[in-house]
Figure (cartoon, rainbow, N blue to C red):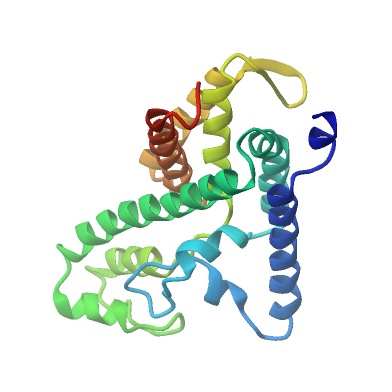
Length: 243
């Protein structure tokens, strides 16, 4: 039994490797004019760059090294425990479903915002935004300029990162080991159940604040936690897991 826990489990290890390879490929090919962000990042349905596979591939893309490091550190820290308990198949299922769920919640929230704007703007102006390129001079009418710019940003702003799945892992760890201590900044102890509740509330508050300078997809984080709760409750009802 000890040997089983003494090494990094396969799924966590392979996820770390895949994410690192995606990151290296993205930045090395970008200098050669090949944009993997355009292909694998999650775009809204209205964007000409949207493709169905992005609902999964977005979770292997990261905007910078810091983004990659913190997601992979959290995956390593909490994922290895969960995979050792659940096994590879259940862990991978949970990881992918929470990441997929994060994408759905994020899309739903942005679609709500998009709908609010398109219900105000004339159809002609909406079509100008939908048919525009990044360099197109479409924001010409002063009265609608801010709404058109906001709509363009919502439709064409890509979402990347494993954060939704990672937040799902944090949720699972907090539910399975509620009284385990997590050390904030490597120094401040806090029980896992309080930590998970705290980051969930922060995601709700930050998402609803809708700060224009905030590039973090808070509702994707929340989506990963929501789908995590649903999946854990379903498995518990079936008698597959206990907590």
